[in-house]
Length: 417
Ligand SMILES: Cc1cc2nc3c(=O)[nH]c(=O)nc-3n(C[C@H](O)[C@H](O)[C@H](O)COP(=O)(O)OP(=O)(O)OC[C@H]3O[C@@H](n4cnc5c(N)ncnc54)[C@H](O)[C@@H]3O)c2cc1C
Image (cartoon, rainbow, N blue to C red; front, top):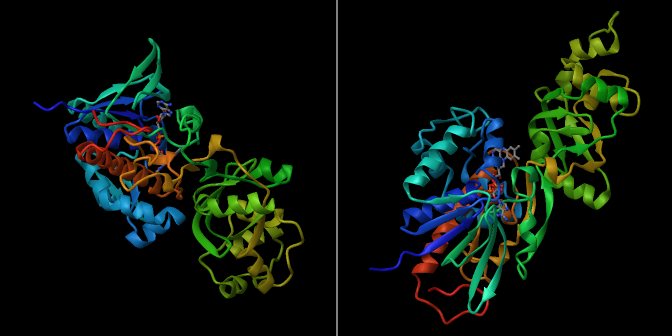
């Protein structure tokens, strides 16, 4: 009888749980450690927004969303594509639908039924889940790594055959993924965490912030450095956030880090050409206030008029110039909101530290997946897709590594026992 090998997965988010499922199906003994008292807290939070699981756009555009990491993510999607993800969710009893924007959601529009069914499946596969088990690091003992866990019963030491790290990024730390793991991976290059899919500061007047915070700008088209995104944005006391802003947030964040400020150009009437809008604005104002006239003739909602009037300088005279202004309001962003409120984070284990199976090259037998790797993407389902796909790839990497002939004892990582 051959010994069943044991793999410990650290972090019970979507990446870790996907890895655990795949490892258990491959016949391995799987233990999942989760620092928090319950699993999948960020997944459940994502469910509050409807749980955008993935996106239906063609693969070329899809992988383009991951910027510099697109090549690596394309390989992960060969193992676990959007079609696989949809089939997997449906296999857990969660029928899905594709919204008009191409985003894919479970019909339930929340994560809890999916997570419940998933945990039941993992229990059926005899995956052991240990909550309140926080990995505090590892140490070398002879030619093996020993992994240390802080638990309510005290410190535990584990010597598994392989380890799969899925401890998440560094956004919304109160949900468990606080990025503290970066300290424990000595010798592994980790790109600094930066907020991604995040709001930006704007120096609103007190009157504007009081009147319009919490109101949406929709539909709008937003442009930064030649990239235009249509969608919605939310005005907040500190500035601006929401889908269209998040889609541009990586470039805006980089520009603010570089230059101190960034200019976001907002088209408040994206469905009309300048000429068509100017034609409407030739309508006489009569007894209407400017605000009312802009609402009626320009078809602008109150927050859009407010924004137009908030920008320094008088409204330009003449329908043509005014139409051009409405279609290109220049908003100066003065700062980036922090990691605590960012939907995701950029940074993490640099992809050049990993082999194709997502094993950390300097730590044989130690694999990593999910948002703890150095990639970023806009909202739209791209985050869960890449997290789960990388979890699947890392699990396959573990299986392959455990099945490959043993190499001479390593001085740095795990040896195969
Ligand atoms: C408000 C919000 C809404 C979102 N909506 C969407 C959406 O609709 N669609 C989408 O695609 N994405 C969305 N996301 C992003 C998505 O949830 C994440 O990208 C995804 O959860 C990352 O998965 P992960 O498994 O890599 O990490 P996480 O889900 O962060 O899981 C990591 C786990 O590791 C645990 N952990 C950390 N350190 C340790 C340790 N030392 N020992 C043991 N355990 C540890 C953490 O407690 C955590 O449970 C949203 C995020 C937020 C915050």
